[in-house]
Length: 471
Ligand SMILES: Cc1cc2nc3c(=O)[nH]c(=O)nc-3n(C[C@H](O)[C@H](O)[C@H](O)COP(=O)(O)OP(=O)(O)OC[C@H]3O[C@@H](n4cnc5c(N)ncnc54)[C@H](O)[C@@H]3O)c2cc1C
Image 1 (cartoon, rainbow, N blue to C red):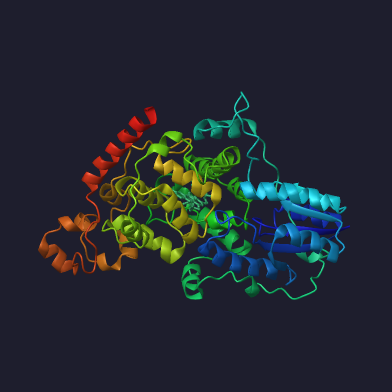
Image 2: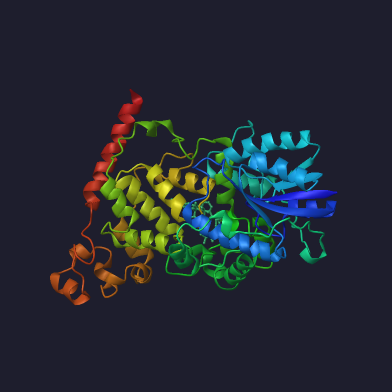
């Protein structure tokens, strides 16, 4: 049998159930397609494109240079490739974005009508998003019961292994040309981003090993401190499928099931929950899950949005986060929550602005996790932080970056500011600013909003929303 394996969010050889199945069936043609039919909301953002470029190169190398890459409409390219390479069967691991579900359902029918056997497998999630449902058959909207249900009731598949050297790969007619996919939006920028990462299966494996050796032991507490190296930084690898959550859990088995272990598993299940929400509420990326938020009086201020995007708000922990994002393609989770709260509450700009900016700048940009997290931060989501709980960017900085190491790493202009004033430089005496070489409004901005007044305005807007929704 000749099988085409369609790589999508599963850019790995190990624990790849659909690829393993293809290899068991006989000769395999490995294919990757940039699907130009994808709607903008799920078409890969700029930072992820840079990642994808490197990841595909790594995958191609592990396949001995035999990855067939194409750009175009997947719905036309796949049937065409099946005919050209006399393919009998097609395999893929399932994707769960609403567009991908619709496309794959249609493609399955088309390929079957051409005489191909089509098999889809579960490759990127611990649990299929439709299996964890409440007793009444409806979807979970709250994380903790979802988590408990998964832990108590669901079994996970075992991992699979593959020896690429022992497989019968079908060689593409032309040499692999990843450059021709045009994935790198700005070579200078993505060069900078990728200095912080090693995309690809080997990079993911190395990242996991490093985390297990030095991060896991302090995960529960350390995960909230952005200057610490306690988090795994596995999210872009997971998003691109360079490692599966099953592989991570398997490696975790060698470690004691203490609080750190449990917290880490819990975070992995947050990712599952995001996919569960996206599957059951496909409008998650566009619409407030709580419809009362349709009445929220958002502001519309392009200058403030640009200041937020560029890390010029005058609030050091917010600016450090936004610059971390621009420079590294990522941002620590604690800081993601702080900058998101600042955008939707202190600036009262719609969460969609934040979602879109993150989508373009994150190397782990993920439709499910990004949408669910923005709705969580905005208060409009299923299981959301209440809108009236507003992060104070000054105290958050003082609490979670007490020595200012993280903030100063991304704001070198504040390197000499004493910790006492680091998160509120406008309150520093003139002599302290002078000594630190900080000139507010010149080499570091004045705050673009007053944190207290904007908090009150946000609470008033929330009350206004409730009044409007009740009409
Ligand atoms: C506004 C906002 C936007 C976000 N956008 C994304 C996104 O586009 N893609 C993305 O992968 N994560 C997103 N997150 C969730 C979270 O910030 C990242 O998953 C986490 O920072 C990744 O770092 P890590 O791999 O070191 O995580 P760790 O703490 O090591 O956690 C391990 C893994 O668990 C998963 N995970 C952890 N926290 C969450 C969470 N809150 N929601 C879903 N999965 C989680 C990730 O896959 C992560 O790699 C967002 C969070 C916020 C507040």
